[in-house]
Length: 306
Image 1 (cartoon, rainbow, N blue to C red):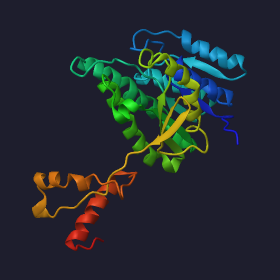
Image 2: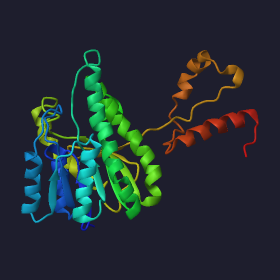
Image 3: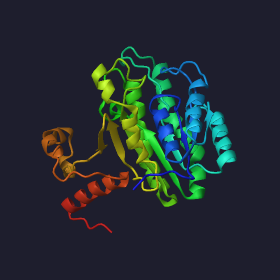
Image 4: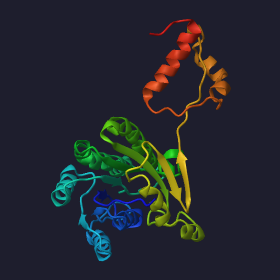
């Protein structure tokens, strides 16, 4: 089976270089018409140029594909609206959105300014929100959409000096979790990619030998599986250096304390039982947790529900 995107239209943000570039090139190689979005700033979000995006467009066209560049700042609603309008005018639909644009402003939290924290959150989280909002109604009306958020191990697990980046990258997971529920009946599937690759954002962070293994192309192979007709819904796919895994948030079965036992001391005393992994579940909406706790309480107290 070959994964194809013939007659599909994709927008890839931050596609002037690194992962965004390989995402755009591979989508185009597999038949997609691609909007190559890139503001053209540096890794810290400073400056702007259309040169990188235009170079990717040229690669796609020279290979026989269809593409155009757009320099919208993903946090700017008017610019993103213009990008979406131009896409609809040219091709009449939008099937895939890859929220890839990002910046770094790394410092320990003690030394980080609130301005730098907010800037990174704005680009990664609000950039994804603005772009997704701009295509959401289009995807609902056409009954089809594939949206990919770019998360990170820094958000899922933490990374020294990246409190701003980690907060933003975990936030897009929460964003995905709700979009999965709201988009399901419209055949809109939303997933997250957690990449590890040698790009300008990882220069100086990994040994040279590791960087040679960590190709953007190896990550893009994972990305493609989140974008086609048979894509999953609500999957966090980690990809890097040829390795692929799924990241999952589990909740332990936990304990129940009777009303007269519900004290901080008793919770602390039973922390070992709270941590028992046996019976843990992947919950797919917040209400499941509520019903679990209510069910435990009702059973313990002999209360019949419903």
